Length: 377
Ligand code: SF4
Figure (cartoon, rainbow, N blue to C red):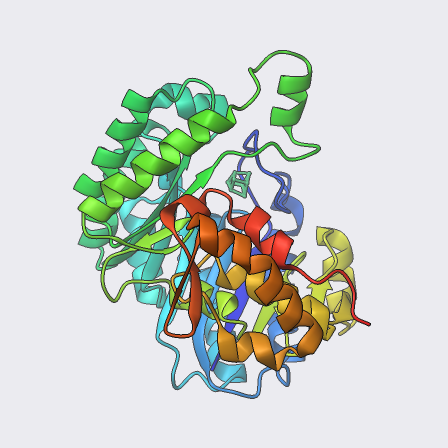
């Protein structure tokens, strides 16, 4: 089973914290980009050799596409791959794009799951982030989506930034739970090099981010969503029963996926590929029937490190049998280094499986990197 990710590299405006690949000046080549995405799907028809289970429109801002454009891309996917098992088609959306007409169009085009970038229900926070929507649109979009027939809805929230007091964060969590969504993704704000936020902090226009505040907000997030019946199945992801993201879970479990579009990544089980992060170069190459991608072989050591990095973030954890299958060097490193975390209670061991405790989740990446192998002999 496998999944396809389609990267839509357009945004209305640039959120101050974002370092994803997108352009805000795309009107002159929009049609060529849609045609190139469809052409790349056809060029990559041999990449997947198992039936397609999930399709995910990410970005960028896929909700800037018209329903007709979404339909055209889905049709191309269905005509190119074995889509008989395709069950989850997600589209990332921003609240300001979700009019009644757009939502009905997306539903008719085949979208059965939305991931909506709400981030906060407070206008001053949305302005701080330079989001294009306002709190009224944030509050209204989920009900509109449900009325249009899309029931499987995830929302994104951000915490740990200046101005988001504990009280406001609690009110964001309460509002999110009250909306009746089935999935919530929530991330601590981070400062990425080259973003407007990093410049604002450097120039003293914004206070630096506060790690203690992020930890406190993460605890509040866990408490509120656990109490509301959500399963904390990945560090940043919470779902009601049966509502985990099938697409993202497949990444975390190391399954194959194909990425379409500028900057999209793919994995075929042995090699990782990434497309050029430049819209015009992407279009020009695809128009000559070439996929502008670089690739690297995944060594055994890298595969082991990635297994730890993603596995430990999930409720599925990492398993004895899988660790041993990476060979003696990886297994020896793991069992030696994990002892300290088992003793401290940060890592738990049950039925052949290692998972992180709630305290361990605060330092998941540090634990994983302490268990990494640096190089293979
Ligand atoms: S809408 Fe999303 S992809 Fe676009 S700039 Fe904002 S966070 Fe980044």
